[in-house]
Amino acid sequence: MKKPIIFALDDDAQVLAAVTRDLKSKYQKDYRVLRTASPVEALEVLVALKKKGEVIALFLVDQRMPEMLGVEFLEKAKLHYPEAKKVLLTAYSDTDAAIKAINEVQLDYYLSKPWNPPEEKLYPVLDDLLDVWQLNYQPDFDGLKVLGYQYNPHTHDIKDFLSSNLFPFQWLDIENNEKAKEIAELHSVTSKDMPVVSFTDGDCMCNPSIPELAARLGLNVTAKDTLYDVTIIGAGPSGLAAAVYGGSEGLKTLLIEKKAPGGQAGTSSRIENYLGFPNGLSGQELTHRAITQAKRFGIEFLSPREVVSIETKDNYKIITLDDGSIVQTKSIVVSTGVNYRKLPAEGIEDYTGAGIYYGSSMTEAQACKDREVYIVGGGNSAGQSAVYLSNFAKNVYVVVRKADLTSSMSQYLIDQIEAIVNITLVPHTSITKAIGSDDRLSALELTNSSTNKKVEVEAQALFIFIGSKPYTDWLTLDILKNDRGFLETGRDLVKYDNFNKIWKRSREPFLLETCSPGIFASGDVRAGAMNRVASAVGEGSMAIKFVHQYLAEI
Image 1: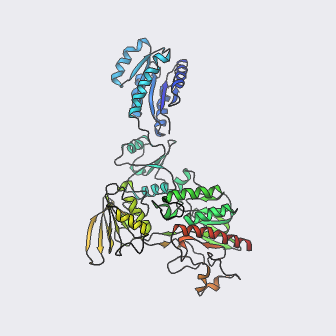
Image 2: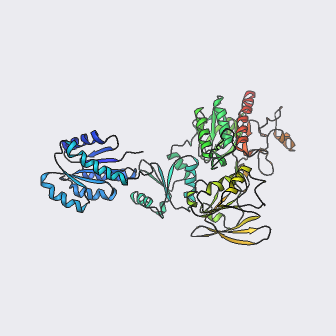
Image 3: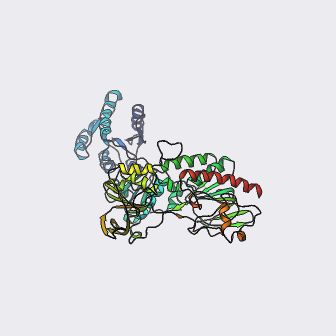
């Protein structure tokens, strides 16, 4: 946490040096002491400090300065730091001006020069003032701040990106947060500039793209080398496991993720059935541990960066990224996972990011406080979100087409949901329409499949967790997929009539190998996957074993 500042101002260099010496001698343990000899320079410094989120506890200012009187400076400084205590250093002849300033600028005290000994004439006064200031001082959040409109889709994307990438930030709604309005005024930004990301060094980014923001935060968006032993596409649990094993076993490993590490598991508020964690852990915690472990083994992590195509040339795979750059690799593990399917209901697209969200319940949880919240989907991700959101929302409704959750959700989650009084299961029901006002979701139309009855209900948020669509549309290489788009691997490939036309090796494909030699699939993107975190981690680890076997033959 940043230390509050005691700010000293005097145009006399000797006096300024003496007062700075005495201030540091007494207060440098708990406060930073800044000094300057120019009132004009001091006002410029105050603006810079304010932009950086610095706090000034006390001004100690000389009255007679040629550029500006001390009282005049304090009046201007009060606009930036109204809560700071104000002390004037005066000569005997300035007493009347100091007394007048008590009313004009709410001066807290005036001290006559000289103040020796400080133990008697300086410290007791400042101690009392600083004690009073500390009573009302609430430290501000020391980190990134995001300013914007709660129901703006791009604002949601930025919050979701920061949260998914484990960057702590403070959300400030420009419509009703005074701190947000203060920062906006300080940086001269308007509603057209929203969303705005404010950094601790005093800079702001107005309406940044995700790649621009990532680069500003120091994320690696450009590959350092041109050739790797193995490139892993997708940093969900399976991809992270593959990265850990690839790095630990000496392979030159590149991990590429288009959004943030963790995948769908990374957005889970609580994973309670993962081996070795009897009290459960959040998806973010699991992701943080995994990415830290992988980096410790020397892997290179590229994010946010999207793979748009793969080509093969001889024994090399050529990966093209969304910025047009090229990466060459000897082998590939595709672990891009799955996306939630789009909800086919009227109005859904109109309010996506403005009250309607696919996953991402943790990012918008605070906005659900005392609201009516709906979740559609009956899987574990939906159940975990329902439990988490029940801590904030007035009511949480879980909408499913079936009669209950037993066929799609783990029993431990069903038991938790049944025990929480503000979670209600809505069976035999589909959401058929989203209704909004002021460009945000306000209601939903529910249709009961048993009675065909429609009802309109109040809803300020809808979180969608329906089914899974593999993220493989980008993969134009001649790789066999099943009718749902999942990648076929191993012996399951031989059932396809055109397999022998594609596969030209004398051996059979390895267990997790696609029909393109040296390209493997692991985790939820693979046909026949178990759709559990533990199995995804296992497949990622196994994939590296087969990578070794493949590399040994080329």
